[in-house]
Image (tube, rainbow, N blue to C red; front, side, top):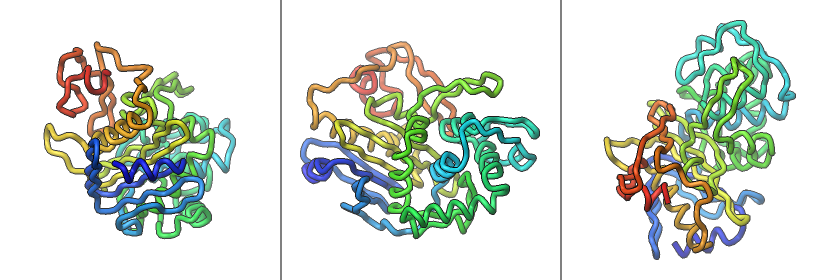
Length: 321
């Protein structure tokens, strides 16, 4: 813990984990076990610490971070895109957009980043570049321009492809770059949003936003090939951390590594400000939980019940504090 405290004292940092993360918070020690991770200072992008930071890994839907920032930089949010057959027919996580429908770029971005909609990803790619292949060219060009030179992207959504990969350090660079954009940062920190698409209201699938005040986004993801993925940003008093993990495999009842990592960040927050308390604790009547398929549901819970997050603690001592 002392080493981590010393690292975060320098200012804004980005923490990236890849594959089978285990983060345990404690008074004197924090253990991080991962196949790959990278800790970088966001402003300078200096790597402070890493393990297999250059190893190629499948990013799943964290790909959509790059998709979104390219769209934001290349078209007005009021731009109107038409849903193609390819967009309507894409597999995986989707909203169910229909061929011929028209949506604003702003609505598509919220669907992309809050609900991980693959149909929105295809619509954005086609609207910006004309085709998925041409959009992939933009993705690789942008990645190279900002220093993420060990990655290769072939689609805007992150569905499995042997030629679609990134690294811990590259994803840290991409996330840090995207979060400097006010529009992007605002979207990924939004908990609920009412779209102009049939007045549909959506909730952010990143459940950590509902559990910790200092979480600011960024993106969840899942494919069988990549496993459960998470890029998250936490900020307090000028200190910013980003955590990204890939390929988490849980058995029933096991605490997720994302929860363990978030608990580590919570411990860091307490160490930095022992008097800090949550300003908007979840209601004792219900707590938002994200299922494996990305669905956000309300779990009824009492103050003395086991916390739905799976920590093994009572709700009042965990997420409900």
